[in-house]
Length: 503
Image (cartoon, rainbow, N blue to C red; front, side, top):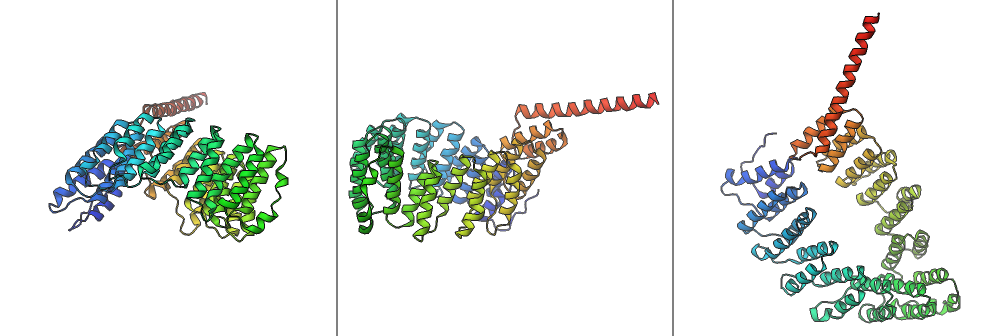
């Protein structure tokens, strides 16, 4: 396709041109050609960001690296989010040393804030269990003026230590936060509370809860209810129900600032039971009814319960929430739908979106629709997913994104419906979403397996036109399918000739 260049090129126009190209190498050619065509033209930060994102998503790491070096030499202003994306691309390609090298070279770029890049790199190192590298990165860079907020970084380190059952070390980091000029937030307390409770350090966990009340909860906050519940249930699981009831009283009075009327009505004798599950249910009920009446408190409680698979308890929170005049939020419905699919309750999950949300005047977003489509495809309900997709497409202001098509095509291929998957891939590309290598390979192999080599060849040509290199298995499937079809044609011809001679 020929490109119609404007008389005067702007960075915004060039961004639109390169985004419209299916082939990332063609987009790169246009990007480089612009300077030679327009001597007075200069790339800016957003154009570089667009080109880097296109090459990174296509797996063209070497070409992306060249553009990054060019951006450094041009000394144009760069956003921290661009470098965070480059670091993720390097990590996805297994180039962890390159990611660290890029971060260390950030002072050479025209960028004054490294916070997102720093936290992204730490998160990747934590995920890869490279804790020693994390430690050195933090020590060497955390005190620089380019890192604006250290709390998120420290939260990542504490979460990593808690995952390997070293909440004692995480607690030491927490105690040192003041010396790092950092102030703990609710995520800090939530992370550390879970780590201490999982390690059985209930005394330290109780002290942490009281400290949180002193620092964060002077006026009572519903957000704190999930942190309180973590400790109370851990005490019950450890057989310390009396201690849990004592802490519950302090939680309701000092932490959540429960209403006096409710505190007078609260019967603590009900908690003197031998069944731990019953005690936990009563504690949860007390927290639900005693929590500060706010949507945040109910939301925190409901999301926690749904994420733990306790759907009935989560529904009780929604019931109490509705009775108090609050409407469930979109985040709550996301958690509920995910929990129902995890329990293979497909009908109930779809009903939440199609009936319950409608009744509460809550409009589902593309992300929630994607959760439903993925759940249906994972349970081999691809036909249902297709009909759901049609309904979703008719919703005003809710356009399918790339994730929607990926889930649908993957589900159709998994169910052996390769022709339907092929048609869905056509729709995907019409809407300017480009499939990845794995999706092309899966579809081509599937089409070959059902005797559709011609359609497979068309997709192979499309794949190559986007500068993607097919795997060896793709070529093998295609050759096998073509040879098999040719063999069948030869057998059919021989059969026809024999029938003619016999007549």
